[in-house]
Image (cartoon, rainbow over all chains, first blue to last red; front, side, top):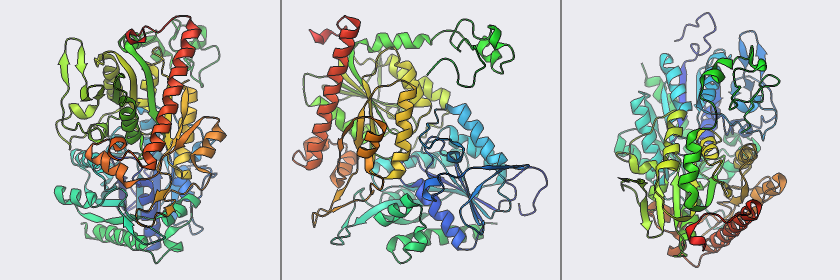
Length: 271
Length: 331
């Protein structure tokens, strides 16, 4: 995989491909995907982030890239760069919409075609990591991306859940999806676990606690850690700020750091 | 849902027209072959569904562009709230094929659907509250439904056409997040059977509103009336010190401002209460478990507004067509 191939195959240059999946919506897939991308960049890696949520793309907003456009070059589409050093690039359907409120009302086949195009036509150049954010579910988008990635040997999938049983129930199905499609599971992250009241520091488990860890144990997959429910993190994402830079001493930051460290380490262990 | 695609050549007769693929304008259109080969006219299922659902007075769709904002939680509690009136029959249809949570939230996980001569019998939570979900058709909690769009549409069609709901006052339809196959199918199949309207759920932060605005535009595109917007998870009151925190901060004015900007009704705010999530996990109704909480009051108010809308909607339809709806219990 390391030797760059000639031709138009833009994915073969990429060393590691990580999918972020969850059966449930709104558990923080995009949040985790952005934080992983930022964390890897902090660790000095060249990172690309591909947003495959066609009906609800949130990644551009999280990086404050709402009004950016995609440029064309002879080889294909150029992704949008987040930083000046061009170490972190993003691709999302939001860049292709004229009005942010436009709804993408597409059925499966059209979504599949778009995803194929995203995977084949984006000029990522020499990335070390490609992080792929997905919509919730186990349907068109997921089948397409997994099929297209098969020949590139992806590192695997990070599964995001929230602790309550209703969410864990859907993530169990996602685990089955990974098993059936032979995508290795890197591990499970439990997001929104516990909220510390900023007034009295009392910790309330708004969405219960421990569901993700129990699930990981039951299915014998690694548990990557808990990320607490932190209004500071939501705030940073809303304004497109880099949470890892702004609040580098919070428990949330430590939790995220641990996850990213683990991702880098796991990859090194791979043959 | 116009029959003429936006990127069609000039004078396109429309994909459902008898001339599709044969008109002069079709010459050279890349989709001419598709139009010629596919069967013409509306899907016969649309009429069958109309027939089947003619004994359902009100149909409400719960939508949101964003996932995890509480669509299923709201659907379940709307149904519970409507069913507190024992003279009303309420049904819940879960069209979230890949992540059905309704069976768990309503406490009927692991139940089976039975088949009878008149179709599939839904699962009963209460005498006047019945449910249908793909969750009842799966072998176990780990079963994943790895289906592409057409297969999902087929099941939704079956759910709408083949479930024997009986006489019903309210049918609440819970949807997955997005604006794709499931939503288009529901809109298309129910075109003839009159949806009272859609309730759109959001959370206060801009990242959710971003997707929810798309959903409002979706409703407009498919001509589905919008009952209003509900803001869920707005404000968390610490059980210890009673101070309120904004976990999902409304940085751009929240659901209320979004509703005003998009010119849709705002139905109300529901606070983030850990007990709601717990009730959902245990399959109980929060409204009866904690009847005196602010969240319950907020729920009741919103439910009343929705019932109001439905009554007005049906009344306006009756005057429009000049005839009474063919509902047995309306006498």
